[in-house]
Image 1 (spheres, rainbow, N blue to C red):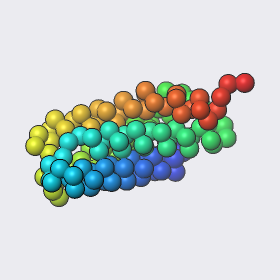
Image 2: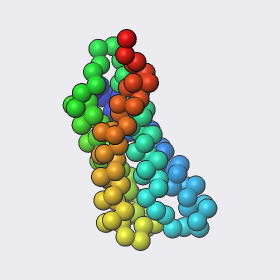
Image 3: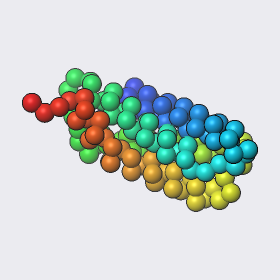
Length: 123
């Protein structure tokens, strides 16, 4: 997977996390849950898979999914730690951020094939 594809997926994940976090804080009045990380993980995975599938010579293999998985996992942790330091919105950050990291690592393994088949159908 190309570094530009990983950067695009990471940027999409972080942008979606921050947008969902802002909306959630505006609606709830300050507290936050792990929902922004779910939104970010799904968005980053789908955009990364879409971009990767459209590149000539790209393959849908475990290496591509694993690389995307690692990048999104680290991105969720970094963004979550930054939000916790800046705003302290999570009541139990060790739980919220742990689930955010694991979820972001799992999304590419679950959702990657869906986007790949949509962009590169068989036949």
